[in-house]
Image (cartoon, rainbow, N blue to C red; front, top):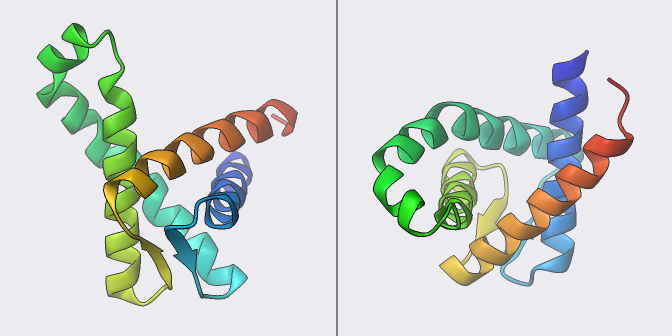
Length: 117
């Protein structure tokens, strides 16, 4: 049940990012957005820890702010994979990915506060 709630929160955050950031588009159905959220979650669970370890010196120098760059890269990668699969989620450009990652993070955090455990 917790996994489903987290998946719905991620899908909602991605949907908000498509509405707020002009360079992030989504043309699929609501069910396909859950697929995009699943891809985003898998990338965050598998790829992000590896990238965090590889970029540890940069993380230390920037006092953790490089995490914002990694989040943007993962959102861009989610868009690339989703477009390849045909889910209709597309992120154009790094600046849009950066702003979108900020939006997704803030919305996910806010929804996680009000979601039941």
